[in-house]
Image 1 (cartoon, rainbow, N blue to C red):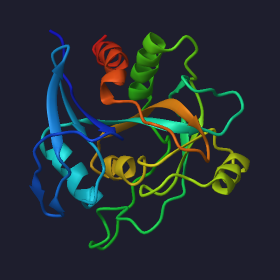
Image 2: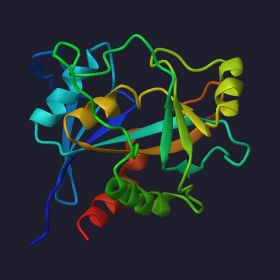
Image 3: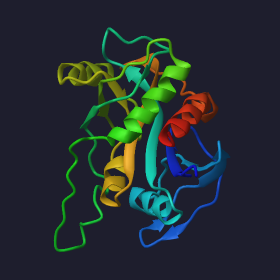
Length: 218
């Protein structure tokens, strides 16, 4: 019997859907659709408390949270149109809700390895369906969710060891780890770091996601 998984997709283009009330407030709108017999939940970060959105996804039954995001290239090896599945990240964000333990006596969730190996393998199988040369490793630098990085910041993160820069990994994926969800990221290079660009629609990720969810059940 094939195992069916409910997978949450965090993306950078607006998604229609219903909001959910949680102990942390109202979640972002969450879209629900089916792909190869698996239920997918898609949402885009907004002004909501990120804890509310991640909690809502967990309450709706998601066991996985995968980030599908258009990113800026910092490495000279990367070009527009390339796809990369990061194996590590740098969190350059600040001023957000980073933990569910802030109002408790204490708590800590290890972030090593940074991503779920099973999810990464699935997304690598997916990336191979949409890219002639998917990149299997790379460091994602997460900057402010409210704006793109400046050219100077792009140079800074490149020197720090990052290969791409994005906006939405933190704190969503780190919060999901606290709720025992399995996390990973699939990124598409659509611009150079420190420059503007248009993000891919979620539909552009669907062939990769289809291959990824099928790989998950193998």
